[in-house]
Length: 600
Image (cartoon, rainbow, N blue to C red; front, top):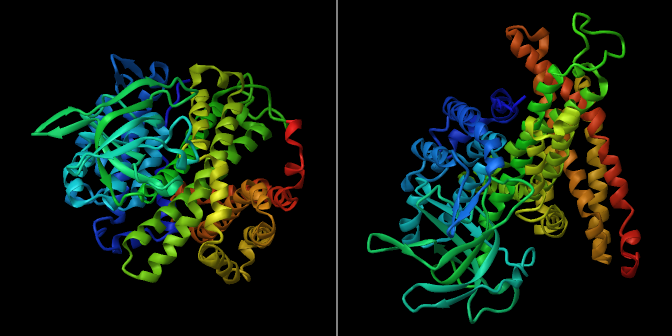
């Protein structure tokens, strides 16, 4: 049973235009063309590409992997044609600015489209998103001269992009970077050093590759404050030609998953580069790229979980084993499909409830980023930026931890068949594992949340979350029909508020308390955020089904009825996890930190 993929377009429409006011996007300056009709047409077309072009390449690309031949990396068969198709359709520049040849769509539309691409083929999508990440960093920080030279090529997909951070001795601690940049005296720099784990670092999809490289100048202060960012093309534009620039790929990694994405060692040997932004301010520019990448990695957790859900549901409908506990459900068949069994339904509904909640959380943050960048109201920009900054590490870590968990649950539905390659779900599990590691491990995301995002601006960002949730609970306090959702939400919010206060107090006395509590706090926050959005989604569904759903088609009534039933499953079966996370974090750091080093 080969895997197939159908884009969840109806649920995306629900999230963007029923749960949230997607029409607001078209009222932002520069996004006037982003009407609902246009956005839905964009997503429908990407859904076709995902299902008909990218998904069929996913399994073969995993089997074949990338190849290093005579110093050049070859992507799996079919990837070049898919890249060409996206180029010709303008997809590389979907959210890029029109002055550089882009389509000028809102960031949130790009995020929605990215879910479809990732679910169909994560490995291929990485080439696309790293290119857009390079575009975004240059658009925000590069000189006009560099923008004019490089951005149109990145936007039209004739050139691709990467970010080069990691070195063998410098992973999370980028202050240990040793790659050197020496002023060449003509506005350019010469870079020497080696980077590892560079996703899409070399390939044959595009004519050229633009590397954004963190390096240290001779006068750089030690540590993170001495890092600068440089643009280093694989091939240097010179006199209308592209000439070699001392950039090479000596090896590629052989990995657990994402085998169709080239993960490279990249060496720079006196390579010509150009300073991006100010000297020694490279992390500011790189974080522009990394923050966008972190949200996209959170989308990867959601997308792979969705791919797993679709595969597991199809298998559960067709696999005949045993009989329903209450007697044969399908007596005309030799056995009932495993879909009738309570434990199989528990697994499928767990995945579904996470997916639909995570899709709403992702859209909420993506739309906040659009407002943070484009809203004409300064107060609204600040509010949106605070919310996006606070929740980005949660989206990255929570959605990838749960995405991997749910991919494993989807494999479990398949039983032994899930463990063999033929059914494809084992690839989903392998691909999902990296999402918890790259763009900052999930433990680092949790430390970022408790160490930076919580205390920033004396807790202002936290208020951007707690205030709308409290206002929603107050407004719905008399709504008995919604009480089955708002009651559990209120309890989860209380746990989150109490743990926030405990963390703020205890971490001032002992920073190890915050470190020990960080991951549980992040997960508590994630489940609470999903509970808020599920309560809101349940309210929308109830309103649509009022008076028996008069005026709705049978298909639409079924959609809203399923939404309500999934919401009930979420609050009864998944939201109770908040109690465990609360108990864990409140226990403090003693049992961890008093354990002797020598006993490990």
